[in-house]
Length: 253
Length: 201
Image 1 (spheres, rainbow over the protein chains, first blue to last red):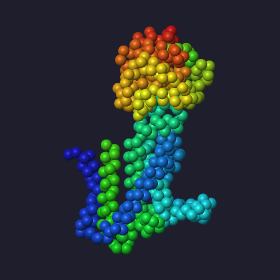
Image 2: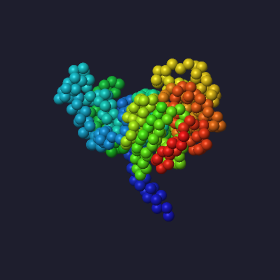
Image 3: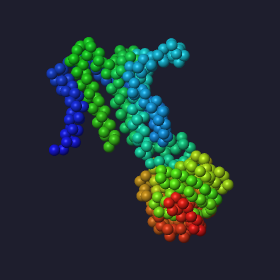
């Protein structure tokens, strides 16, 4: 008897049974047409687009920081970068609202130029970026650490500055790592509920006027229409997430 | 002229080495004798616990790698995504040097860089030729070669060619090798044993 295999199979079952049960119920006994209505697809569209943008922002803003962490030991800064991922996410939502409110000079400035985070596409993306960036950093750091440092030392010895070495030696050889880490961070953004249920319960801007992000929509369906609509819309979301994970597998091969 | 008197403790290993010479210097010693540690100290990858490093009368002990005018080459040294021709002038471009095409052609011929393509797709020996040629063209004051001559075919001929080019460009070289006979091609020979250096000639 291979006990390790048995224990592994059981623990895997704990993770996947709820998901498959939801797929079965959602498209089977508990099927409710509201769960795959036009509104559901609009909100999946909003979630996919906003998460992809958040992941792109993470790549642009946080790739240098991940590289810095990989090459310099700085446990205080690393712990700080983890904070958004480790505190309850509604707190992030509240924090974003406070920053963008007339209570702070920055908020006053934003409002004076007509920028509003509350129930806006911008607020949604900011919240998703803050909660998913720590995941991006955590995925990029080991990738950079596993890169052969001899290439960088050689480039420095050829007179390149640290920044030039990063831009012209490290980045061109990091495409696969960046793509894979950004997909992981995008999946994380797609599953976010806590902060966006406060900042952007729905978006009040075209072309997504009145659309809820998908996790919020599931919650809303549960409270309005009951289990059937919630389970069916969840099943649709699960299919989208599985597609994302298959894509990630293909990229990592 | 490179003058180094350095002490460095790494775990239970401690290095205490003295090098003071110019031109083509060979460094030999068994695995774990401290050859790579010494080169890393001179190249700026490590900083010494005690001591000083002077290159052509300029103190470089605490300078970052990119400001030392020292190029360090190991078996893995290259910029993988570049084509051979762009690779060769990459360092010179960083330093804003104007290198004549004839000089590049001379180095390519002498060092047998008669191939093209992405550097990551080359064999180890070919990659080492490109890395060494690139370093020469970037005109540092000192080139450190850590075991990067060993995988090249006819490496004795290659060492001769490399030595001539370095001498012409007034670049000092320190190289480590696993073949003790290679020291006969050097101007000076240092041996390391358990972290202690001895000057043989």
